[in-house]
Length: 394
Image (tube, rainbow, N blue to C red):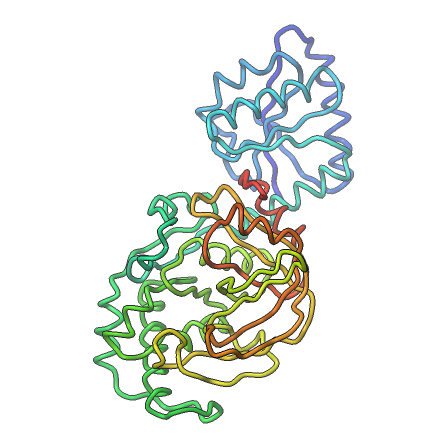
C-alpha cells in the first residue's frame, strides 16, 4: 500500500514546530508497516498512490484547503494529530465538504487505529474499481421511488451501468435451440426448457457486455416469452454474477456490495408481513440462489402462475437484512436470525420468517420494496464500507 501525503498548515506556525509533530505521527505509522511519501507538488498528489491523504498540520489550514480542494478528488481523507489545533481545523474542513455534498473522512486517533483504518480504506478502494453492471429494460413500473440518477450516483462505488433493451434478450431467446435440461431438477419439462433457455440467453448478454452483474425487467418476459427469469437469476448469483429482478437498481447495487465486501451471495426479497411487537418479518420471493438453501423444490412463478419459481428452505441461523435507498445516501442494516420457513399459497415461493430489531423503521422510513438477506452477521463490515461514502444508517 503506497500512501501520498500532502501537508497543509497556517503560516502562523513555524516549520520546525510542525515538522516535530508530523515526524512523531509518521514514525508511528512507519512502525506499523505503513509506507508513505511526502508530496509537495499538488499536481503529483495522486500519482502512483493507493491512498492520498491531506495532512492538516495546524489550525488556520481551513482557507488553505479551500483554495486547493477543487484540484483534489473525492473522497477527501484528512489526516490529523492531537496538537496545533489540527483536529479542530480538520472538522471544520469536513463540515465544509459535507455542506458542498462532497465525501470525506477525518483520520484521527491512535497509530493502531490509523493503521487499521488505512488498510480498510485500501481494501475497500480495491473492491470498488471498474465494476460493470447491466440494466436490462427499464425498472419495473411499480418501483416509483427509483430515479434514473441512481445510475450516475453508483459511480461513487466504481459501478458503471450499461442500459440494454430487453428486446435483445427476447431476440436471443427466440433464435436459440432448446437447451439440455438439468436432470437434477424435477418439474414440467417444457417449463424447465423455457427457463433454461432464458438463463442461457441472459448469460450471452452478460458475456457480450462484459457484465459483473445485472438486473432485468423480468415481468415483461411473462408476456413476450411466456416464461420467467427466476431460475436464471438464481443460477447467475450462484455463479458469482450478481443478479437482481424487476430492474431494481438499488437492490442490485446492495447485492453487489455484499458480494465484493463480504464475498457472499444474497437473497432479494419482498417484506410480506411485519409483526412489530415481536420483531418478526416474513420475507418472500421466487429467485433465491440454490447455494443459500438446504432444500429446494420448483413451483410456478407466484403472480403469473407460469414459468418457474423457486421454493427454497434456509436453515435457521444468524442473518443480516440490508437495503439502500434510491439516492444511495441512506441504508437500513440490522442483524438478527432466520427462524423458520413456510410455504403459503398467497406469497412468492421462498418464504422465511426472521427476527430483526427495529422493524418499525421499515413502516415509518422505508427505503424501498425489496430487502437483501445475507447469511451471518455482517453489520459492522457493511457500515465500515459504507461510511467512506457518507451513507447514513436509518
